[in-house]
Length: 170
Length: 375
Image 1 (cartoon, rainbow over the protein chains, first blue to last red):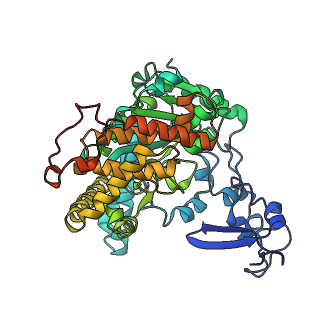
Image 2 (cartoon, one colour):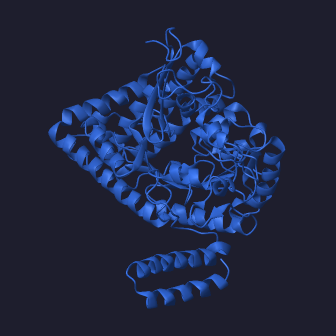
Image 3 (tube, rainbow over the protein chains, first blue to last red):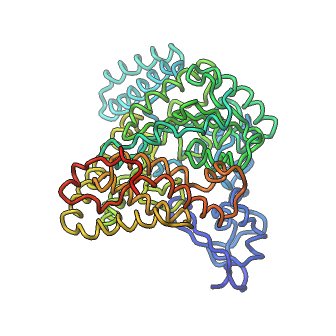
């Protein structure tokens, strides 16, 4: 089997799940070393694939991965973790990263778990807030429904309820 | 502070208590992942940030009532053999053993709780119990977690739950797993089918030492994969139901094998006994596989019932790092195989041959254990 990057004999074979799809890459020794494949901690196949495999997807401008192109400038204000870091390691830098990269979190989590939102234990101090949060979600859903079915009187009532809860401070 | 030698001197209760549920479920484990709010996760933190997180967590963890006189060490202060022993006992992860500076392990005296500090997440807390006891393990660990909340502020989001380094652990941050011994399903060629069914309902099946490890000694771990969108109780309830079902399948498979092909069963168990009693060189893979059959023999009444505990203890003691610890020196693989065989022979010395009993008393074995001099 030949290397995907040059015509030498491939000696390194990689299989990895990238966004739910099985991807395979074959590399020769020098190409593998050059791309850091031999270092299992710092490597993601997504980089190789997104970073322009010849003949796999659109050719990329040299040194410009799509990550860098599509506003990779975003950075977590707490820990300095960047969008590029996230795309590379598929992990996060700190708890606040989840807010910084909330869009990406949504994509990553889809299909990974049973549901999109937490059910279960909540730190004691946050318990009250969690209950409130759930109640608000419920009310907002009902409000949408009421508006959709043009039950404006009911909608007004729900809106007041949301307002009242909002004053408790979320 | 407890010393390493004291900690590992005796097998933990959970290692030898797996005779419940017809011996199919050896242990139940719960792991919770937690991180400190506003601190970078260990994998991204700079050295001094990791140290700062450790300085915050370690006193809080050591102050827990459950951790009174616990074993508490930085990984940098442990030898590679000591770390490996902890891995073999499932007290720390392989990933944690690979760390040194700024990471620590705090392990409760009886080895039922172990906390990894600065693993992939700031805190990886674990509770182990013998047999199928996921709920009990969770309740105990959750209590510990709540106590820690009083002194540590964890990263939590109302929608995403506990925030973790890897999004696969978001939500409850909980991995619940059980270790199962399934020789009946393996011998009757049903294991693939059963494991596939388990996989299909979203549970993971792994070998003896977790992700990417081979299944040895007919031992399998079943655990949840999804951590977000369901409560801990729901996850555990489903897992317990599935594990009970697998355990029942295993029991049925054993009974059917004895009925349909008693000669094959006796042959397998007899050969395992022969090899273990008389081998002078044995690698851990071969030993594990034969011990698995000997354990099955203990459950089916080919040997006295305490043979099961004997096998469970040996399972741990014949692992490479445990052997090195026992012999007190670094061993080449060939030396290990010799010492392993020696330990197995001496432990099984008083175990009488399975053909000493007739098929009639197999279900109701007459104990020979009070006759240790039996050749």
